[in-house]
Amino acid sequence: MTTEISSPADSFTKFTTEEIKKFNIPCAKELPEPTVCKFCGKQLYYEGLMMMGRIVCISPRPQRCTCTAAVQSWAKIDAEEKISKQERERHEKQEKEKTRFIRAVKNSKLSKRHQKCRLNNFVCKDAKQRIAVKKAAEYIKSFDTSSGRGLYIEGTTGTGKTHIAAAIAMELIKRRYSVIMQTTNDLLAEIKYTYDELSEAAEGDILHKLKTVDLLVIDDLGKEQVTAWSMAMLYNIIDSRYQAMLPVIITTNYNETMLKKRLTTADGDSTSISAIVSRLRETTDVISMAWADHRKERKNE
Image (cartoon, rainbow, N blue to C red; front, side, top):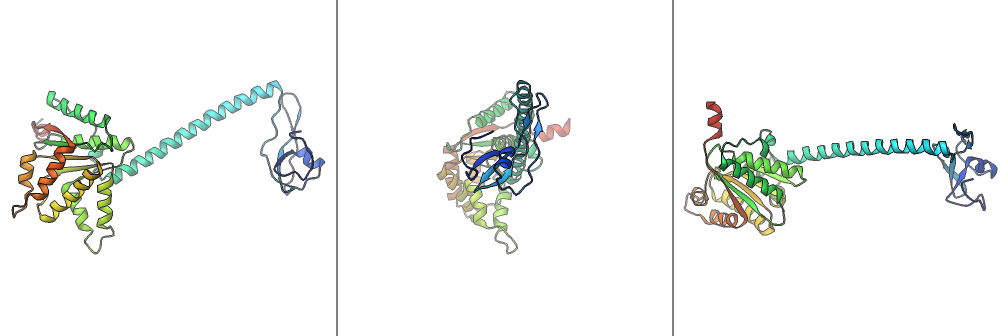
């Protein structure tokens, strides 16, 4: 017997099929016939759960025999099933993480080309380039959204600024941080498109993502068309992240002085860009990447 029986009407109690028959306990299902232990021949019954005076379910397997050989056999089966379960869970976890990563990369707006960027596939030919990669690696290692520390990656055309920024973005996505990386032109164009009556997106929704994502990477700052609207929008985004102590990575061909000059509006208004540069100066570390154009070198090889 599996339990002491005081009354066949006891609720929430397990009974063997032998006991169910003996006490004539109502059961909606046909009771399975007992089996025997293949090692010692002991008769093994199934178990039923009684609720409110009725058997509501029957176990899918008979009781386990307690003979030494059966105990050893079940121990082996349990160990194999545990390993199988762990393997299934590991596979399911991998598939779930793969799905999350793919979705996060898609949401990051990284181009297919830049999704392939890693620090370990950045070609270093001299000490300056190795220093840039080292600084990027240190940034990844110490990344903390609450610190608000970002990077200002400046340098000449074709030196790999975007590669470095994209490599940081991909690694942080892998580490389960949310990232958006866009060129300034694409970022502003996406906001501007919300003004079109055909757009299904709302300006507020896009701005909210840009302001709250764990890391925002603005690529090619200084290449955009300079208007009062564009500068006000950039200031809005960068200032909101500054106030929230959320990091920004900037890539640009311009140092601070040149950037101010480049992003001063046609009427001479430098208020927004001056405020942007001030915030970036306070919250970003500089990585300088001024060397020969990689693209030209590859073309000439």
